[in-house]
Image 1 (spheres, rainbow, N blue to C red):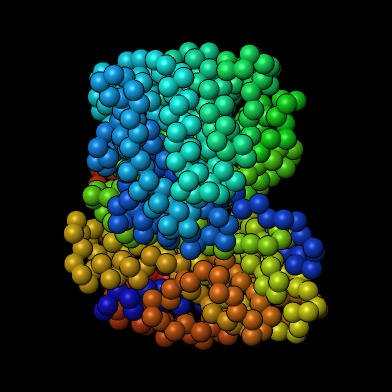
Image 2 (image 1 turned 90 degrees about the horizontal axis):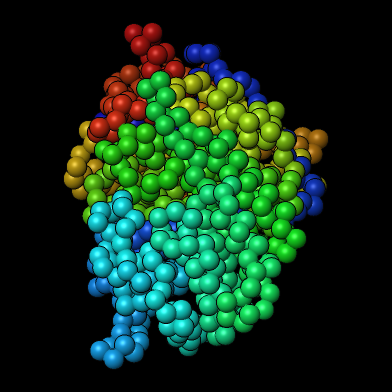
Length: 630
């Protein structure tokens, strides 16, 4: 039986909630949304992305992914990369990049070549994204230790590009010359782009003292703002916001002696730091650590809030991820199996909302939370790198961002009986009860509600019955249209399809088409008409562990061209309401039995990994029920 038909039936089973009565359920959750409230502006902090390998930007896969990210987000997308100032011929390589922007002639005079760096920024802007320029690293001709210039391995930070300049005036000249070139090519870059000096100078990316880095910042600030007075320049992009370097930098910019002017302080337009959660193998399963991630966010926010000079300065967490090595595959670290699963996307969505909560509590102006993941052209399918796509196939985490990215307008009040207190997540992570929570937004005559089911432990669990009650404005009328999109292991998960195919190293054309059909969020319902009762619409469904649902409510007959485009894989699964499930159950189960739905291969671990990424409870329950019927 064709796999596409299998997916169709799986979608229908999920929509009918066959887990009910077939197995123990997770805790029931009620979510209330006040769409009648005016709401507050929704700060869409999630439209920031980045990656090490600058030269991947101009590959076919890179440019296609940039266009996908822009199409998936209602907010402007910002893109950050390493190695923009590095010396080299621009050959793409793992954890390396180069543009040959700066060299010197025999007399020691600067020679500028904008060819490669223009291709990179052109690819970003051509896709509709805005560069988040990371000014770095050090060109070979400027480095105080130029040889050996390249790192000895992809995972060793020992190359000459991580050293201070031998001449700070020449460094400033480089920044100023390139900014002038950018201004001629992109006149609005000063007001639209964002700028940041270096990357993680508190660890091996900077082989110099704090004083040398502070001096570098002063020269960079003077040079950039000499060309673009309106540019938003930030830093220090530290790896650890809870350590001394971060506070030292803020103090230098507030009250230190400026190395260029001799005056007190240096202009700082945005504050940036990084945070990584931590992923391990615990009791032979993958365990994530949302609590640790958020504690690091809190440390960074605390440092900013304590600074009298910068307490209200915009903050960007310019790398925020579950773990620290994007270019490490599952062959190197088997815990990285989470990256191919829907759990990665749910972690990201939950982390974004909790970060907004933290920022609000601590009174800081959070503008961006950047996901350090992109694509790795030329590597194996589903190799377990921290990526959004593999060989052009969208991973479940990208589908999660498609749902999240569709939110726009005013953020609406939302309460969930399944949401853990923020204090509990900060203290203990999500290790006991799951965190079942949501975000809601309204623009015009449309309301979107995003709901997710997150846990730190990647273990099998029952689906949770969820009832979403939306108080709709009177102008919506007596009926609304409801569309329900889903990402979980049965919807929008090309990795599960690839496992069912037998994990082919080189998929056939037919297999490739199956993967492509599975790389969009699944559609459980499309434009179902629902009656408004006493001003409220109720939508009930089962939500599996690591599942994300997007409900889109519109006044009947209203459509939105910017809504995400989930795929129903060619199947027609029109469900008038959850109630008819029992009458449809025997026929559907018979179909499953005749088809011989075999999902056992989806339990196989990634090569080199025993970490378990399990089927959603609905499918497991359906399979058990089918076998009992035999």
